[in-house]
Length: 86
Image 1: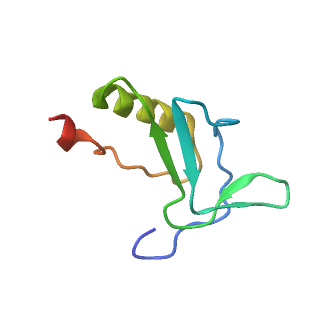
Image 2 (image 1 turned 120 degrees about the vertical axis):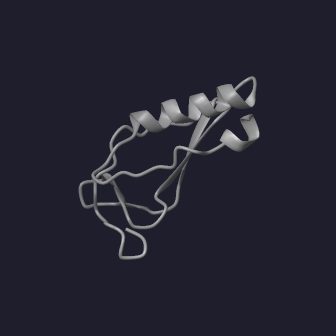
């Protein structure tokens, strides 16, 4: 959406039921709709984080988590951690 308005109200699917010791999803631009669904509320919607025995494994685990999450017009960065790994 940047620099224009971000889409709002898209239902987010595939969120984990709860965090585990290996991953966590932080909510930023989310809201609940009248049906109790988690929806987009603009801006940076979520931050998916994961652990691993090293940086490469943690990055791989984070992107596996991201692949499970979806909504209309989903966009995510694909370059996180690559400088540190190389």
